[in-house]
Length: 174
Length: 174
DNA sequence: CGGCTTTCTTGAACGAGTCAAGAATGTTGT
DNA sequence: ACAACATTCTTGACTCGTTCAAGAAAGCCG
Image (cartoon, rainbow over all chains, first blue to last red; front, side, top):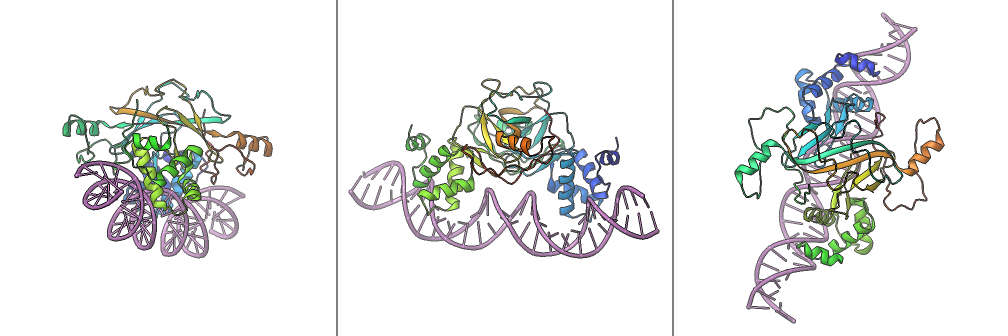
């Protein structure tokens, strides 16, 4: 299904900004709003940031895009919807990657006692270290103290994105 | 263990603001920063908001408090740490409740393919409707259209807290 | 192609959270 | 108990992601 057909299928008007935003999110899963704006402006230099916010809100509302926002991060968007996957987030650099659900279709939905809530969806975020930061922390200080990774210019993974070290807790339990 | 002993056990200085914040969070699980500040000022009218932010950050860093922040909500804190429980969040009113892990000790940690990430922790958020909003939506419009709940003056659950309708998505899947 | 609605541009505003400098307080050693 | 030191708190300004509002432009339908 083309990007345009996708929009029409959801009763959304087809506009240049929407096409551009959709294309960018398809190319760069988990990109944040600012990154999306930059990329969109490579094609449409005149789009306003407000247009991008509106488009992202409209597409998320229609279920075309999914908004994710791990603690300490700004809003990120992805075009993979409806397949119930989850995310791993690196505590050191903030990189996000997809993880398929471990338990099949409806993951972890069997909460023991839901306190009377009608549960519609379960959202799972795995916290850890991405391969790069893992290697960096291992190399820099073998006994494991004060990782300080995150700057690694030659990256290729499009899903990777750098943040100021967000919230590196030490009470992690597995 | 008294609140003061708890602080000392974590090598944290014992100060009035810290005692007050800990007491408030113990009494009101899932309270947001603003609510905590208000409550703390009932005992210590002169505390600055910055002090509360500092204290919350210090206690979270030490593992005495846990910070949670569902999408569309501001930061919330709870004193229940180390027992690996999760949360249900109401899409309509934002109320938060605890849910014990369904799968035992380390829940849902068995992601199928972790993309090379070293996973330390899994965070699960269940999205749905709280009992009150569920009842309200059922009463107001039986066929299910336009819930508009959330205002319900006579509440007793201390874990409940009202927000502007945060992000009521309709693409929910179970 | 004309009219109506939605979307986009422009520019200001909001609010949670952070930064910084100095005063106050808690802790430790004598 | 007291003094010295480090940490924490007060005060006040500020940042940044996001939202609000009004009018112009663009998409869609008959």
